[in-house]
Length: 104
Image 1 (tube, rainbow, N blue to C red):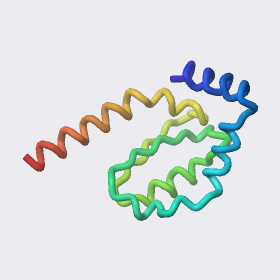
Image 2 (image 1 turned 90 degrees about the vertical axis):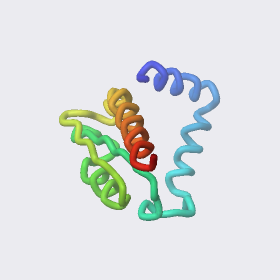
Image 3 (image 1 turned 120 degrees about the vertical axis):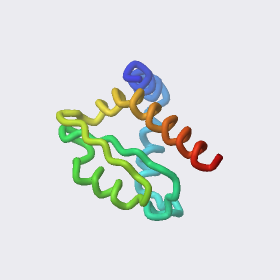
Image 4 (image 1 turned 90 degrees about the horizontal axis):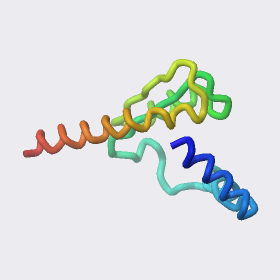
């Protein structure tokens, strides 16, 4: 995951960082919904050493989504959440499997 992220940054630099500009536009533009409108399960991972997004912001965002789980990663920085990919996939698949069992 980290190698993919670094590769993305290198490739973005070759395109004059247009991707970064597009990301900034997405951050400031109205998306047409609020966090409270989300009605599917959402998992949040947040470290307390993230210099870009404070821990309190992650906790606040998770609190806005009715069906959310917040996972605290002590000492983790902004990119450390990439290390949680395996855990994320396991949680998603587990939630999906238990939902299917409940409906069937």
